Amino acid sequence: MNPAAIPDPSGSGLTIVVNPSAGPALGGSPAAVLSEALPAARVVELDDPSELAGQLRRAVSDGATALGVAGGDGSVNAAAQIAVAHDLPLMVIPAGTLNHLARDLGLASVDEAIQAFRGGYTQEIDVARIDGRVFLNTASIGSYVELVDRRERLEGRIGKWPAFVLAFFSLLFRSEPVAVRIDGAERKLWVAFFGNCVYTPRGVVPRSRSSLDDGLIDLRMLDARHGWARLRLMTAGIVGRAHRARGFEQRTVSRLEVVASEPPIRLARDGETFDGSSTFVVTKTSKELRVFVPAGPG
Image 1 (spheres, rainbow, N blue to C red):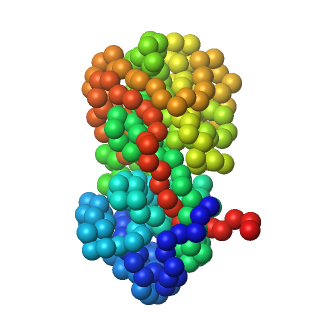
Image 2: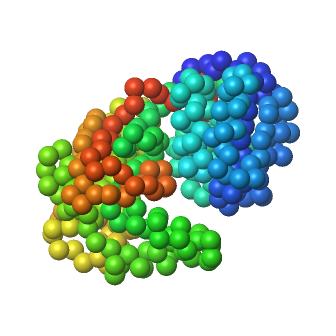
Image 3: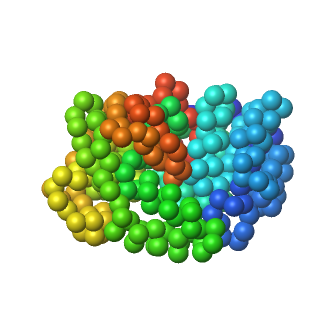
């Protein structure tokens, strides 16, 4: 950890963008709490989530010396790209549904994020790319991407968690494996996850990382050629026992190339999906992201 270039614990030079639609933050939007705790900071609460990147770019143009984002992992992803591009430290404020990155940074609440900023310590963490797009946690191909797409089509009508359950059970009967070539080897996969740094535990459901700067991609795949029924496959993945199944493979790499046998291929990164290229690379970027973290021993 390094002392941050932000000497003022009241928030001078800091712009925080709050995405109140990112997830079920307890107690509602944290904008008021942030404004009170950091009175010299500029706190912007969004009406439209699509304005997040624009607000942060405007803050950079106005001379911000640090950026902050309150939201889920998708919001953090968008903010991280701007912070990396302008070499600015990022204050990660957990206000989403899962908050994977904040959790791995040791930030479990808005108050803990505020204390980390006031402490003034930053840590440089790895940034990965899939098909040229940044991810901080995981990226994937296969069944998980289908799950996210189906959930998003339903959640506007029935809510996020009911949509997740309905999408999951739909996958049990309709999901098909994806055919790809990974580093020259032909594969037929139910799912492949690409982790930004090594995750624990083993299996197709990566949960947490002890290191965020190991320079590695954590590759996890479930091969569809071994005849597992969908129900057994999905259940094993959820309870974390898929690593015992034939066809499960896990290894670490620094870079890999993927070729889709039947493009276009759907990809996911940090919980958001998009159409990928017929050939793409998964790797680390040359730049790291500086984030505010709790002070360690000493």
